[in-house]
Amino acid sequence: MNTIYLDHAATTRVLPEAAQAALRVMTEDYGNPSSLHHLGVRAAKEVADHRATVAAALGCKADEVYFTSCGTEGNNWAIQLAVHHGRHRGKHIVTTAVEHAAVLEPCKALEQQGYEVTYLYPDATGHIRPEALEEALRPDTVLVSMMLVNNETGFIQPVAEAARLLKRKKSNALLHCDAVQGFLKVPFTVKSLGADLITVSGHKIGAVKGIGALYVSPRLHPMIPMIRGGGQEKTMRSGTEATPQIAAFATACALGHKALTEHMEYLSGLKTYALEQLRARVPGLVVVSEGDAPHILAISLPGHPSQVVVRYLSDRGICVSSGSACHKGKASHVYAAMNLSKPVRDGMLRISLGPSNTRAELDTLAEALLAATRELVSAGR
Ligand code: PLP
Image (cartoon, rainbow, N blue to C red; front, side, top):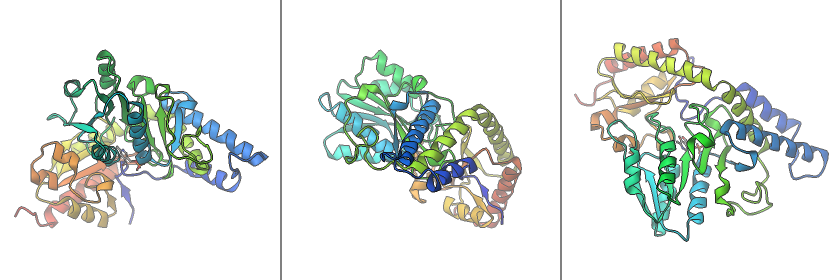
């Protein structure tokens, strides 16, 4: 059975070039970047080059990029850095109700420590209104954390507007952006976003799992270390550099950066095609979000529980998701925040596309969904 993989927001297949780069580092250039011999020196030079490649994809300086193990770590670290930076100014944070758990959970932990967190809700179109942020800002706000692309709806949130608003209001709050789903999917640079902290993750862009990066603005210096030890990552995150993962990540960044416009055009066309086919061929299907980002759309088959349909499709080789992979099938806070009716919420499916997908695969998806509506007993009946 062929696999039709339509779950690229959960993770991606590793690009052959990225896998090759990791393999070469594992088997040839395997030195420890801290070692003084020639293998170590070569490894250190490679890490420096890779950091510069990641920085180029983000549009920042190499020394503003810190390697992390994943997007979750980047978000946790960013929030810690921001609250430490603002510790003498206040204990108020603004974020959104539709952030990933890797932002919401650290915020919850801070609430336990006496921080107050304001959660902004999306409007009827799924977007956070900049006016809502303006209303929420206070003199003691130390951090605003707003994602770029929502992982469950594909909506792009107004991060650049948030940055401009903070400036206009002369707020001292730092702006963090979880750009895990936006990186190399929609165009942005550190400058165009205007955020002080930006999180990205390797496994969403064709690199291996276990690597990500955090952009940190010089405004945050002096920083506190995330992990103390041998002094790697300019003493901020000790631990021997994950050189194979870093090599794969930089390779995926370089390829993704070069192909960004081409990929965006291809994925937008593919999504338009998917929407046409699904609407025309699957009666009762509700399009919940066409998304703004080219790779994510959210649909629902009201009356057919997501988990049942995900399994039905999986049995036919088609991988989609019922929302964020991290929920493992639990009810989504994002769809709850959008005020959808229960039958629509219960039937949610997220389709997330990658450059390797084809129209023929989307035809197969539409046929399988039509068959699902006929073969599966509707929960409502
Ligand atoms: N932020 C968003 C928006 C995500 O979609 C994800 C992963 O799904 C993460 C953060 C966490 O990234 P990672 O899986 O690299 O920890």
